[in-house]
Image 1 (cartoon, rainbow, N blue to C red):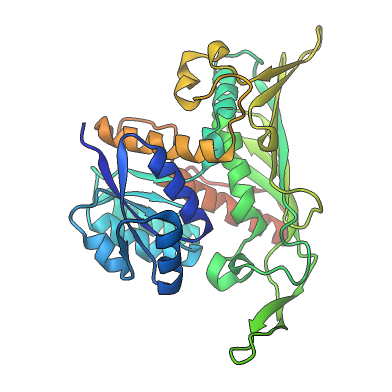
Image 2: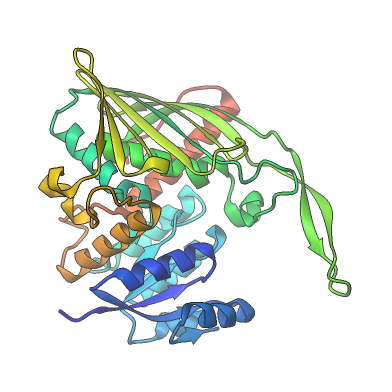
Length: 382
C-alpha cells in the first residue's frame, strides 16, 4: 500500500512531537513542514533534518502531493486553518481544540459535512495509551461491574510563578478558558473514553490565583529582558462535579499552579465490584482494587493484554511506554483508518473525532457558565 504523504503546519513544541511520531509510522512519510516564522523554520530544518519546508502555509495546503495535513498551530488559528485544509480536500489531524469555541467548532463541523470522504482526527493522545485502552476494554467487558464513581485530576506547576509566560495565558490566543480547555478537556476525553459514556451535566468552581502576571519584554537594542504587568481573566485552577449519561457520578480538579506536579493526569473508575486507577506519569501500569481479595498492580505486558489493545503496545514487558508512544498510537491509528478506506459515517475510530471535540468545547463552556452562575448546567443532546 502506498504511503500517505503528510504535511505539517506549526513547528513549535507540539509540532516537533508530531514529527517524531510521523517518522515512526510505516504507513506514512513526512513530506513537508510549514511555519510563518522563518527563523524558527530554518532552525528546525537543521535540527530535525526536514527535507522540504514552506514559509507560506497556503503553499503547503495547496500542494497536490500532500494527502494529510497536521495542524499544530496555536488555538486561535485553528478555525480558519482547519477550514482551509478541509476545503483543499486533505485529510486533517488537528491539535485540540479544533476551534476556540463551541460556536466555531460547530461552524467547522458544518464545513466538514460537505466532505464526507475526509477523515478528521484530533490529538487527544491520552486515550491512546495502551493501559487506558485496557481500562476501556475492562469496563466494557463488565470486569468491574457498572461504573459508579469516576474521579481524578490533571495537575501541573508550569504556571506557578507570576513571571511564567505562555501564549495560553492570553485569551486572544487561547480562548475564554485556560486550565479547563487546555488540560481539563484531556481528562474529560480520557474519562469518557474509558467509561464509554458522555458527561451530560456539570457543576464547577473555577479560580484565578494570579490575577496579574508579568510578561517578558525584550529590549531589541540591549537584548535585556524586563517585565510588564498584564491582567489575567482565565482560570488557574478549578473543581468540577459531573454526571455521566450512564448514571455514573464524576469529579475532577485541574490546576496549572500545583508545585511539583509536572504532568499529573490520573483517573479512577469505581465499579460495582472493582476499581481501576491509572496515572499517566506511571503510564505502563494499572491498579485494580478489590473488596474480598488483595489489590493488584498490572504492569503492561503484551503477552497478557487482550487482542483488542495489542495494536497499541510495542515493547516487551519492563520497557516503559509513555507519552510519545500514545501520540504515535493516535497518529498511526489515524493513518491506518484512512488507508483501510474507513469513513466517519459508519466506522467508529479509537482516535478522537472533530464531533467529540466539539462536544468537549460545549462541556468547557458549560463548566464556565456553571462557575459563573453557581448552578448545575445540563447539556442538550449532542
